Image 1 (cartoon, helix red, strand yellow):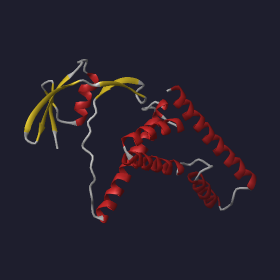
Image 2 (cartoon, rainbow, N blue to C red):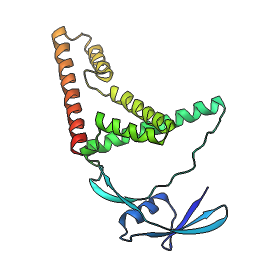
Image 3 (cartoon, one colour):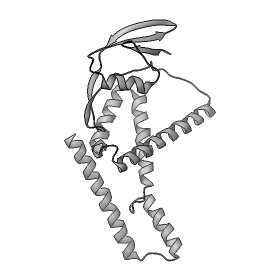
Image 4 (cartoon, rainbow, N blue to C red):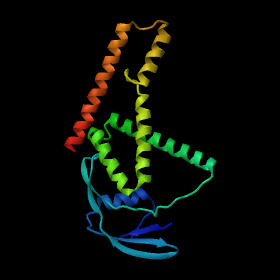
Length: 201
């Protein structure tokens, strides 16, 4: 594939280096130098300014898209690739949750049903493959959230069962109902919060 060599004469060694130059430079446009099929090419590229909900600031960026096409792989290779990509999405999701909890990412970055609907519409415009990719990511995220120790969902039920096993005694029906109600209240508050984020964003 193509390889970016320099921007405004500065050598590019990593993708992060490229991103840093574009985001922090005050230049209106950049002279890109890249290698294509062994040939050196140059072009002036002007980045666009977009709002980043994570940093709550306007950043500059460019889009790099590779030609899309169908790739046919053996069934076993598809299975291995699917496992690797699912693992990567899980790690990214867990890291994002960690950064939310530690405050490294703004809570305003959380999206709700309105954000999901908007992203789905934008993905559909790019094609069925992009929409399916988004749905896969959403499904994996929901699966992980379902394992969180919140009483009303599966993760909470697992924790309750473990506690009962350790205590060697089941919670009373009244206690279970109270725990469930707390869980439902937490989920309702989360839904209200992310929906409010969607509306005010």
